[in-house]
Image (cartoon, rainbow, N blue to C red; front, side, top):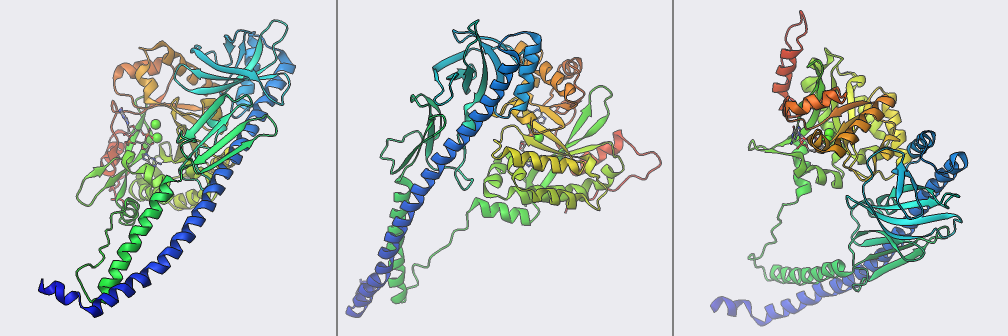
Length: 533
Ligand code: C2E
Ligand code: CA
Ligand code: CA
């Protein structure tokens, strides 16, 4: 009570009032200004998203119609072998196409370019494609739930038409304009109003403060985009509360009280990653890749681990997504490559036949300066660029196809080889990925698990292997866990495999010992493994 009386003197009360006024005025002004800025930015964001959506959809549909027209002039619509070959060539040459097929008048698929078993296709809508005489646009859902559009040419005399399936995900930008996660939603529909696909939050009507609709001049596509105002309100409310706290802090400072010193909590996961990167806590593990015919070692895939100071090991699934979204992935990947050069350079350099693979996030293929980085990291190390393989996963959507293809070509120009990882699991479709001109395909564990038990998967793997061999690509099977699978893979003509049946990802020292043991260099002294810096 005594303390209370001492604090609440008339002079102190005046100080409190002045403090509130001093702290409050700038906060009110700042609040208004920030509110107006948020409005402008929010509206600009949704406008840009809708415009990008229309541009993307028009471009993709242009490409597909061009391919279908060329094919129809050449061959009409039939399931003869020569025609199926022509369809296959057209599907490979045209980026967004996942499959070309011949479709009967009732919508039944008669044959496809890939000779794969036909899954059920659920037709959601069909309508003439606005602005493109003689073409139809159907929206379908495949058995696995994937949504597709089917662009069809006008049927011939037999009632059959030639059609291309295109995954709807390639018709709508999947990220915000700045490249991060879009905080709202977007939808693209046909001119007749059938929804083709949507991304993000699905509540445009929910008092969405920012909304935009753009209609395509060419094919009549309608792109809607929206962004809720709610998160911004929340931020603004925070701001007002922050204002009250600051006012209180000013008052208390004026009063000379030391009770409420602002405490900063350092608990930001991105700062954590940065700190760990600086401290060298990301280390390479190596999973051997084995020749399943001869049993020889072909190389290894580098898989990153976060070794914390307390000795615990964190797996990549827990931090790679954040490293990618925060932009740290490039520094992390380069750091990993440097560590491999230090730790395994001598051993790999003595065995030029061994390959060393690195996982390259899709993002790394959007900046051409990565080519220089790769060259300089391996320059003056015993590892030759012809030993290096970079894996790009089919799971990451490719934002800019032309640029990615150029960067891949530049890397291949250095002698580096490019692999597609997780084949069969991504959205893009294999034919799309193959147009990147890669050297190796890695068949995902999902298919390896199903070989021998599931006929569809076995056929898919057979087709992949055929395709790879025709296109002079190597095939690596991933996630091989037992010898029965090894036998099946061998029968299918696959040569390289990795998986727990041979070895799990190993720490550097164990991997180097393994290499020395199974692939000794005659007459050479054993190389002392260096610990990565
Ligand atoms: P991934 O590239 O598909 O790597 C294969 C994953 O399967 C690895 O998981 C590996 O430990 C695991 N694996 C290998 N053989 C078997 C098996 O026989 N059975 C089973 N069940 N699993 C097996 P890990 O190390 O947890 O890596 C997960 C993913 O994290 C990788 O998948 C890759 O996409 C990503 N990743 C790892 N290191 C890096 C990196 O340096 N950069 C980037 N961008 N991504 C990385
Ligand atoms: Ca990989
Ligand atoms: Ca994989």
